[in-house]
Image (cartoon, rainbow, N blue to C red):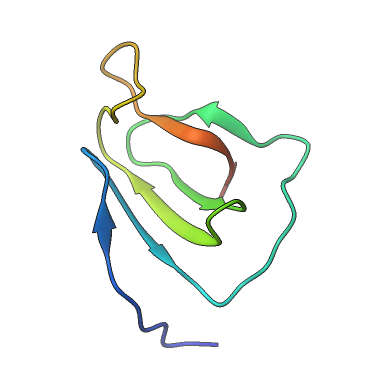
Length: 71
């Protein structure tokens, strides 16, 4: 499983990259996250690092495009 090799993408102040993991969305998954939180985005099968606002943020906090499983 490790190391993980992939292409890093950015979405304003979010870094994400696809990983070879297929996990379902957890009941506690959420779109609103805090700066510094890490998450798994089930829709994109991606690992996400949130460090500031994203294009869908309504304030200075990060917001995922759709719910993420916060790690």
